[in-house]
Image 1 (cartoon, rainbow, N blue to C red):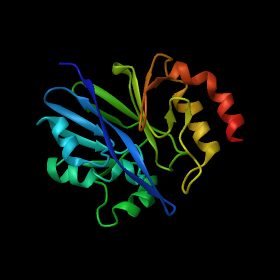
Image 2 (spheres, helix red, strand yellow):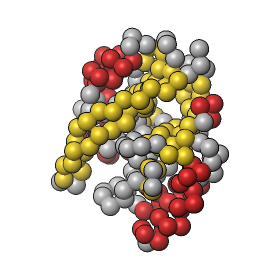
Image 3 (cartoon, rainbow, N blue to C red):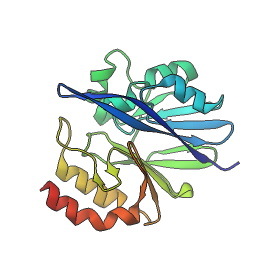
Image 4 (cartoon, helix red, strand yellow):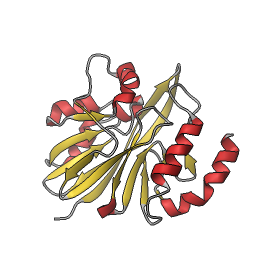
Length: 209
């Protein structure tokens, strides 16, 4: 059976630099009827485990280490035995949320993760966070962008560990070079496509400059 994409929305809070905000997060599950990978274990490990429906969880992949994307990762790992994978540049952020529990493995630029006959390739896309990654699955015509690229623009860069020129370079060099029909599945909100977002790059630069 070919891999499919399941989508779950969980709710909780995002905290950084002394502020806390209510947020809804997209949790993406890629796999088939027997195995899966979870992208961003946000807020509710019990709900994510239920959505897996007994499938073997091969990995919990973190697009970055802001607390709203990783707060449920240790509990989900404990329940399923799956390893947590994170780009090492985001360890300082990770330790703010989980000081006593490190990730189980590192994500590297160009690393491939295979599940259900499909390969997801990690693309290091710093800017929103130093270790932010996107996961490109050409067989599914999809890229999972976390908080790097949204419908209508780049992720926020106004807080610690973020940098606007860097996120623009990441989007230009790593994402807008993908086929225009590629579906962009984001960390929050609605999906979009590379083709819809590419023409807006100059506007983002003007607005953010």
